[in-house]
Length: 414
Ligand code: HAM
Image (tube, rainbow, N blue to C red; front, side, top):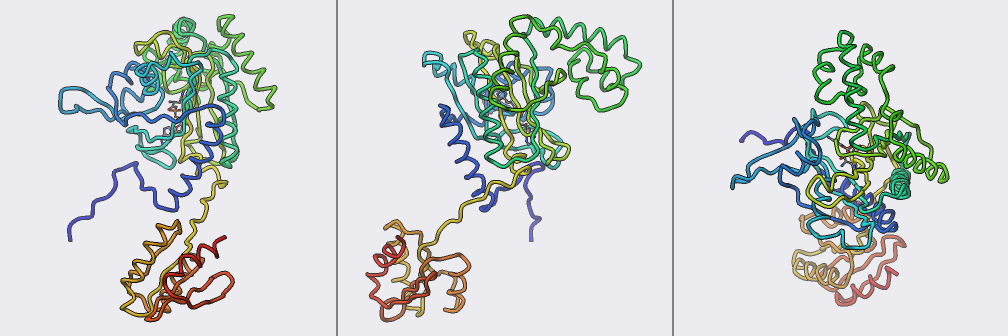
């Protein structure tokens, strides 16, 4: 026997039972997001590498070390999408969606790829449900997207959620703040571990994420970006908060909320769940008013989020896959009934019934057991003379010519 080939690290298979649960998740997302005017969008699995380098940001972990990038064979560098926002901005531009009535609201359910250290809740191919709204800077759109996300998490039964909310202001404010933070961190270098020190110049805000006691102490007195917001950004944030307060959604202000992507402006947010372990982030997002411009479009404000499907399913028990009905199981009492049984099952399916026929060569007793196991509503036992149709719920049994089986099952189904 040859050596068995296994799935790559950090990937997993979605088996039928799980796939059915996911279909339910998708149906719930479609109801909530579709109901709020979001249209489903699908973009390619790979994109020009430049889209992410420019969009997500050269200094982010994602772009520096997590992307699956390769030459497409024609000298063009392409990357398996690590996230959905930059691709959707590209699609918005490419299809002239700025000419549509704004805001343009789009949602997606897709898989994404990041070369991360695989562990529970963290995969190299994972799935997200996301929503993006383009063309409005109204705080109502920020609040609406957050409320829709909260509704989705609730509908999926995600337990123990907490919402953290912050504002990053505009890039100019952030650039000035970044310099102040860098200067502050440099004056405390001797209290910081090497990995934090090395990032001072590259990405100083990440120091807020460090877990070691020394850095935590230093960060307690570090300057906070939220204290330095421009008046119009502070006002925008206040309005988002008021709208969330009016809706009765609980949140915590987190002045140190740092997202792992560079495109954010103004509002940022993250939902965590205590039902998860170390990877407690269930969903996150924010406003990205400069991203469309950054990838070559006209200035277009936008806001959105993405929620990890694996983590939502891990943190919730609310989603149950609906049972798939089997209207008819065709059992064979005699070997020469095979052909007629096959035909009957096929015709039953064409008539709109969920129907299966015995193909495993089981004994009649074995077939009836199997029909029971798969929850068949009716079993038709085909013999030399016609069929005997049993209603598995009522236990009633009737003998009839084969041609009458389908009408009988259709009647019984109602
Ligand atoms: P993100 O925070 O990188 O944001 O990812 C959003 C969610 O995807 C996370 O909260 C987590 O649930 C899930 N996720 C991320 N990486 C992994 C992984 N390796 N394994 C399993 N789940 C994962 C974004 O991707 C932004 N595009 C969100 C956004 C949309 N911002 C604005 N619009």
